[in-house]
Length: 258
Image (tube, rainbow, N blue to C red; front, top):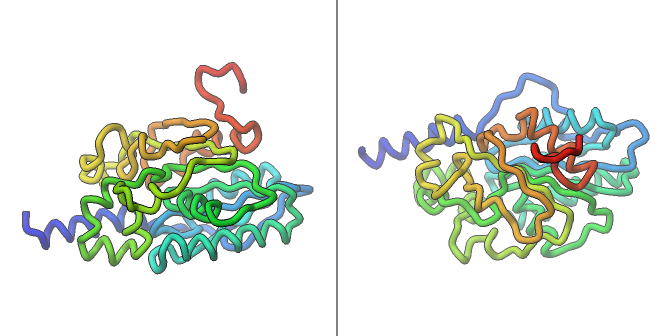
């Protein structure tokens, strides 16, 4: 296969996997207040996505009487460090404006790396519980394999280049979790991600391996049969996210807790 054709397949796959069109009005970009809520949840989308992609899970959390702040940030145009220092303070500010006494986070993919970087530099006094969905906590072999392609760099920007698995990649330089953290990841790649899944050793969701999602210091961990791109829309993922926000653990199938 020619390099040009390979490049075309890569960009088409990335577009289909990472770009979502929504026909609803987002709860999103602005904060919303749950009745009488003193807890807020900040949502951080992943690479090459937008706050639209987090609408379903944001609405589900909002309906449980949390205040929410679904943050939109330009993931393709800046480094992780720069994005973290703008997106996360915005979420904190919106939660504080709503009178929240505890600030939780739900992140997808690179959004979790933004939060880890921010917490390596600053503290959040009101920090509560964190749920990360398919975070590349040890990087992704997909980045190792295709980061030099023009279309990858064009679509994913400087932050995408930082998410490899090498010792100098940004995720590898961040420390363990020192906060209540639940991680949910998938092991069922979407059809359009199978070519990327083949680059990743072991079970994976088409972008991130199950092993790479793990993080030292995490509180709980769960693998579900979901793909990377739409993990946040899965009903069971949403249910488990809500459970962790309430109980600081997941409701595992072998658990008697309901």
